[in-house]
Amino acid sequence: MNAAFNLDTRIEAVLDRFLPDPAQPPQTLHRAMRYSVLGGGKRYRPRLVYATGCLLGLPQTLLDYPAAAVELIHAYSLIHDDLPAMDDDDERRGKPSCHRAYNEATAILAGDALQTLAFEVMASIPRDGCHPESILRAVHALAEASGTQGLVGGQQLDLEAVSRPLELVELTEMHLRKTGALIRASILIPVLLAPDPGEVPIQHLTRLSRDLGLAFQIRDDILDATADAGTLGRKPGGDASHHRATFVTLLGLEEARNRLAHSIAQCREALSIFGPEAHPLRALVDDRAE
Ligand code: GRG
Image (cartoon, rainbow, N blue to C red; front, side):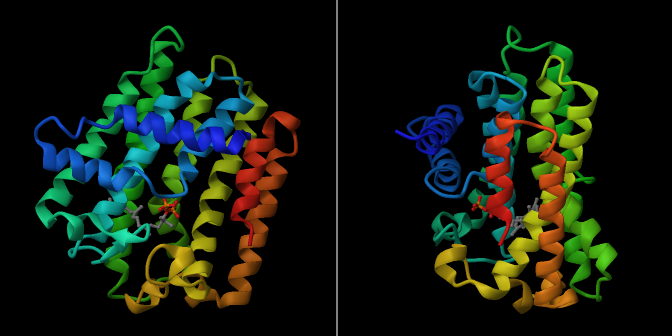
């Protein structure tokens, strides 16, 4: 068994453990939550948690909590993003979106319940593995990444951008919140939980977290413009059909690729001070390069 297989299995098992029992009422809500979280997705954010935690020497048993929490927030945001009032998407991760498989009201509640579950999971981080003050800071970081300064705020900026053209600086700001904030939190939460990470590693991981968030979105925009539905797990060209500015529509494909290459180079540079203990993080950066 290789390490990647082990981590895949671990992430699935951890999510399964934290999600509510589908046999317990309200069964429909519990099933909708499990439907949207389990058996799909690349699990990029929990992988970042484990990779950063591994770099800092944190045990996987501790990292299970924030790894699950960031994926639960991500899954909630995807459910709500697919709703008719938002992007109105019928498919997600290669299957019907939550409101199509269930109904709109259940999908709203499933997203709400996943969000609160994420914070319940964070608040359950064992006190014997971590100082309570560190846990509090980590909970705060997740709340900030999820709220108006993070993905909800980014989503609102995105909604408002449909009616007017965006400048590159505004597009970048919007994505640093909408996509970047949770990527950033997935790296910074293990840093906050680590007993003594050291000033220089903190600075480098903070730089990485920002550049990787941007690289993630630029690559997604490039894929949206170039990949097929099988690769994307949703309809390609969705951004263009919603008349949204993307890095590709604003910069053109070639310049978007240049920006992606630049962000990836910055990520690699941020990791250059670390040794082999940063290999899992380097692999996740490489995964975002074209
Ligand atoms: C709170 C309604 C609401 C929205 C928040 C994050 C977000 C805003 C919406 C999600 C929709 C979206 C397409 C955002 C762009 C970020 C992105 C590329 C998400 C897809 O992430 P992946 O590729 O997906 O990690 P998987 O399925 O692999 O987990």
